[in-house]
Length: 129
Image 1 (tube, rainbow, N blue to C red):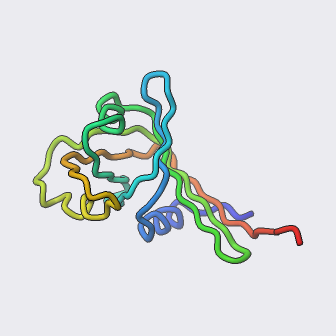
Image 2: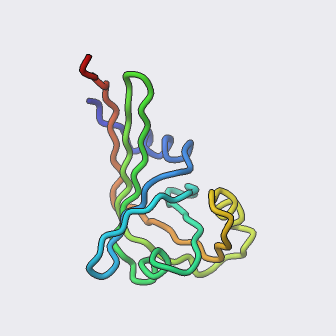
C-alpha cells in the first residue's frame, strides 16, 4: 500500500465525477451516490430539496469517497469535512455542476463539501486463485 499525497488525491478527484457522499443528518447516517465537480479544492454537488440540502444547512459532518479498481491496481480517496449550502453566486457560475447529474431532475441548489482532511491510498490487489 502507498499513501497518496494531497496533490495526488485532488488530481484523482478532478478526473472523476461520481462518488459516494456520506453525511450525518441529526441521528441518521446517509450514504448516497452523487455527481460532483471540484473547484478551488472544494467538492460541489448540485441538489434539489431533500436530505442533502437540509444537511448542508445544518453544516453536517460529511465525507466523499471515490475509488477505482483496474486489473491488479486499486486506489481510494476520502475527503472529510462539513457540508455547506452555496447561497451566493450567479447561476451560470455553477452551470457545470448541474450538468454532470445522471438524473434528469431539477437541481436548483449547490452544496459544497469543505474539506478538513483529504487522504488516499494506492495498493496492489492480490486475488485468490
